[in-house]
Length: 461
Image 1: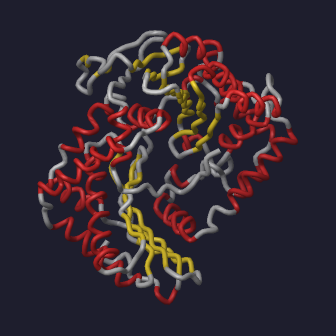
Image 2 (image 1 turned 90 degrees about the vertical axis):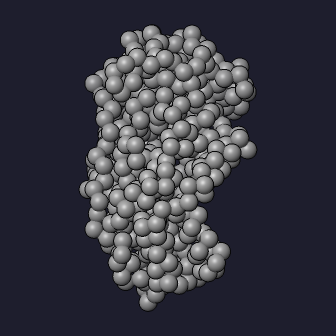
């Protein structure tokens, strides 16, 4: 299972650009079962499918996007159970993650040992990633072993054994993970900033759960959740690899397509309102101090979303140049962009001089808000992200994640087609406007020497 961490996403854009370019050709509209379709543009006009290797279709109520590629023999199949933390309550935080993790301990068809022996023999892997907008369970295999690997994944989703002794072992494993969630200074400052920022929002809930919720979830709770929530209306399946549509339709129809339909419908989560600037302090005796603050961003459906990506990247570069390179006040400084359906941006630094460093960060934000950046410099920056794509090979699994975000966040996988053009369309005046609109109301968290804490951190933000 991938460890769940508080989201502090790098301001660097090249990863998103890479995935976007790899996913060019994806289309998404919700067709009738078994039918492929082109996409519908926002104005209601018909849009052509953008490429012959990507198809979007329904199978027994499961929404499927297939990107067929012959670039390699690896197949990545990501099944997204939609809703994320909006499926949870404070009392049930972590229940879906717990259910998916427990499914590795055996299904009604395979014992725990048989499951492990089979995946080892196939050389395949099943991964789990519980997140705020969805829980993902994915298969990674070679083309020749994909059928058998898929059967393992599908069996874990539809028929977990949920043996009481094994569930208790899973509980202990999750509690151990949760108990160390704030052990490192970076993890602690991220958790504190997250709590301060998302208070009252569904993102404030923990996909992996808390000590209290995981302790209280019962075996009956897990069984009830499995019966009620493993429905096809919550499922988005994205497959990237050298497999054809007929094969995917056959596999889905024989397995997860037999699940109840349900009545779930994805809707975007509420946008985080602009907050009141604040500072949360956690005293620690450390060689350096950690400071992280978040501010609210636009919804992923907004045209401001790519502009904020660019603006945070510009700010990251300026902070690095001024605070690390010129002043030598830090070894790590960033202006992260939080890529979620409800986005956020941030300011992060580790330093032995927090007051001085924060003043410099404030000055750079103000400069971005007041001065228009050089158009040629902005063009080079955006082009650099695109160039870095060509220098880095993205995995099939990363492409699947990008397609899922395009479907849910932008309403259409055609957003993959538009992504690079949207970046290139950002103008200097857009960067200034975005900085003025969103880079305020920062909720800071500080971990370190309380005597050095920037008590007026929120001033100017």
